[in-house]
Image 1 (cartoon, rainbow, N blue to C red):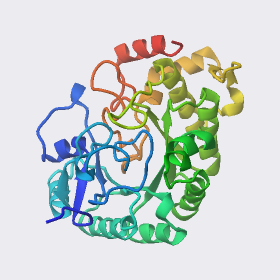
Image 2: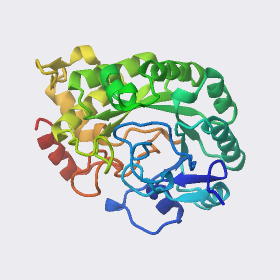
Image 3: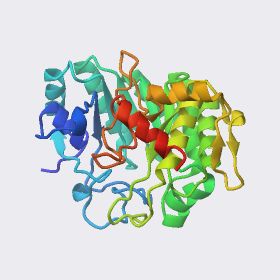
Length: 342
């Protein structure tokens, strides 16, 4: 029997551990309050994104491909619902990730409705704009989703075309993604939709911050990722961004999304590197000491705290944490202060 959506879903390894499908422990006792699930089809995803483990051009069958470098095991939707019910105190949000497959629109709607009928937990959707129309967003909202994520991933139209578009024989278009983002904000409301963006694909720091500012100005937010190469992908040999670059972008994103500062306050050198945040040292130090800019940015639970914290999704568990899935401790902040201008 084919294990395909909507009857079956893949879960992140972290979600499988949280629900008790898999054994394991999280580094530094991190917790995952969001259950991340991914639609699955034998025909796979139509995308050829250069950094993605699910790319059509990556060797192997779709069901054997990893995503974000880890296993995404397949489980029955009914079993996932049962496990979430049993672990209701641990789960603050569910996130359904689509793939670019023509069956995904109808199935996402059905899965969302089924989850909403059986569980009293907020539901986010990470959607595939390439295969969608505005009416699909209305259906998603009617069926119970309350937040939308759009993985723009690339900070500039040029990089998007080069890594996700025609250059790699991919179906995605920069303009379509931003159009869908605008429609999501219109239908779900301000601060109910956001973009995912990956630092380190070849953009300058100024270009990255310009895109973060654009997302905020439209009424939404940005969830940051640090590039980490996936084996056998087109970008498997592409380096991670320097840690200092990522730390500076993390602070800039926090300042913008919290309405504390904006692009016009920042200073850059001739190569587009961020050199000054345009605020008093004491005020900046307090923000850094809070640790909040360096925690995973993700959709919140009912308590307003980040639920989708994706432990170690863009770094290996260990001392080189990029997105903290918990509040950084004093020693972490000391390390971050050293890293910031590296």
